[in-house]
Length: 271
Image 1 (cartoon, one colour):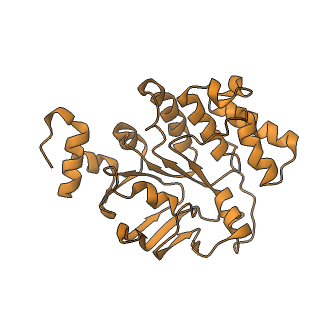
Image 2: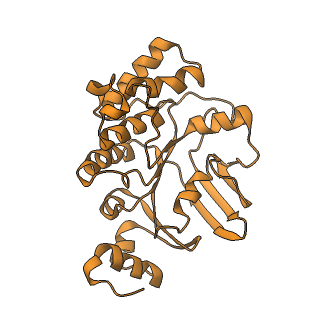
């Protein structure tokens, strides 16, 4: 579905206009809001092409973790490396380059209400990345076709279901040929009947070779698609494991209790 959509043109290794290795590394990462410690001494390496699902209870720091990667949140301590290069001091053009290599799909879609589906994609291509209108439009239509939204190219967000809006948002995140894509609970705001269509697109994307980091409550999706599960609670990584191992026999007691709650909600014990 997504073959041929990702650019592989070489560029200087001194910048982020192209990633030689679409890897992400957290080194002793801390995040605080005042006296509140959100993330505490996070150490994690995600390899190129890996699909990682980040699981954990609400408020555990999952979303903050991925928002630090492209500086939607700022570090309080430690460092994050993308393509083996630190990102903490980036600004201006360097930060724009990084964000063009790292796509982000938000929980609430974040589409511009006054723009059509295709215009939501072409806007950044033309005004941030310098594309001409015609190739930008062709790129937008190709992406919309790949997420099953070509017939809705000229519809406004208000005319689309939640699942359709999220598929447009995924297409938009792919527009600049990112080599890493981050998903922040992409199905949590959707009607249950709409979740499957978004997960189907994400499943196809996971097989494209792009590096994916997915914060999700969709346990079956994580089990089937992820290469690795990272379980976070209280701002700390408590367990990392292959999906089958994590879901069959998690080693950390907190992970065991978490799975009991989410997989057997009618037979859970009090935490």
